[in-house]
Image 1 (cartoon, rainbow, N blue to C red):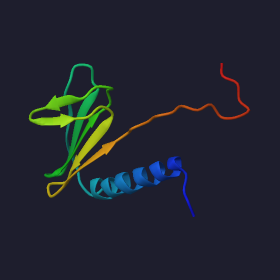
Image 2 (cartoon, helix red, strand yellow):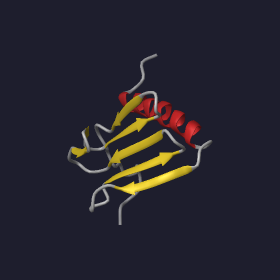
Image 3 (cartoon, rainbow, N blue to C red):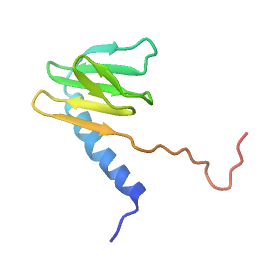
Length: 100
């Protein structure tokens, strides 16, 4: 069975964020930082080691020595680091509905 690209993106999203949520829910949120004045780059720390840095903007940014791509998140659990990137975001109107 061949899955549509949109289904694959959803499956990938769930796999990555479910693992993070499983870890984060067991830990206290120990820090939250807005890293740039425009509030588009933020970092949350859970416990001593789980850190998530998110760049909501449309431009790459550098935080310390680390480059964070536009519209991406870096998940660091102390033993490995994972980059999650949103390549394409589409806003769709439900069929049969009119805006306004």
